[in-house]
Amino acid sequence: MADIKIGKITHYYDKIGVAIIKLTKSLTTGETVKIVGHGKEFTQEVASLQLEHQVIPTAKKNQEVGVKVDQKVKQGDEVYKV
Image (cartoon, rainbow, N blue to C red; front, side, top):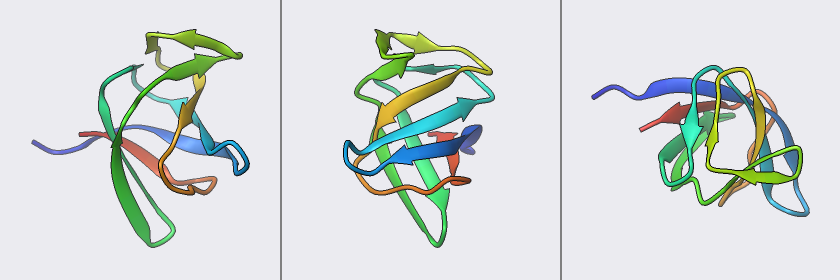
């Protein structure tokens, strides 16, 4: 099955390891995402989602949510659901 593009990184908070993702499709805690860009890619499970500092189980299309990431990411990196 092909990976489905679900959004793009709009910001990365280095000190806390959190990426802000602008979603084009929904995303639920527990799903696996692949982040691709700037010559690297990695896959990880979404442990939690935050919207305006509130933990939410599912984020909807067009929301910008915070996700703790395992590796550094950069603005413009693309996010896929795998």
